[in-house]
Image (tube, rainbow, N blue to C red; front, side, top):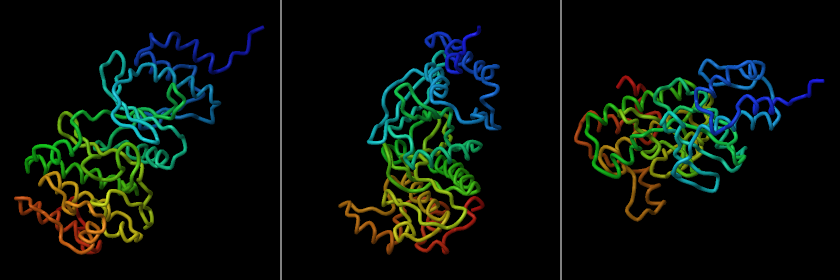
Length: 319
């Protein structure tokens, strides 16, 4: 009589020794007869379950994938989890692993939804894998952005050239347009280990200088106007501060604050004392401090940093 072997055991037999698994073997395994009735491939290239899996089956699939990833140094950590630099074994290709200590934190759900929805945009970081790691924590494997964040170039070092700034602005605007077309706002708010909002820390550059927007833990569906969560004060728009219902306007405000800061090397709304009430009053009542030696960019950011959303530039991409 043939013994009843569980699906999880069949996976273990097919995979063999995990230390001998490589990317090519893993991809062939996912396309094999073993998974044909359990997985279907989406147009974006992801595999998704056809129905609900038992936990041992889910772990059986996650374990082989994670075995081909060599962990590296920790990039950051907090109360919700950690972010580490990793490498695909046998390929030398770097990636980033973001591990969550708790599975159903709202930020995880929002980020997953945004990354899946925006996988077709070349200027938004790519999600390569989502599942349980070997320590039973839920994790994302994300595209590695090797050129550093905008903060590293404009705010924490030598200011970038105006030509490079205009190139980055153009790609940045396209990323925000894509998000808004998909009825998503990037959002503002604090989470680990960075803060999830549009600011220089959360805009990465590839080795060739192209941008990648990441950290979507405070993204929200903006099919209808709603109150959006606030975060890093110096990038918060007046409507965020006043808790007014809105849709896209706060993303454009944060974009202008971010790019002006990167170009001129200082924030447009800040105070040396760091006193929140002073910064709040500046955002609500003062003109932004823009010291850029380019009339077009100065005018562009000024149009986006009008206190009332209705007075701001509407056709940003066409400007």
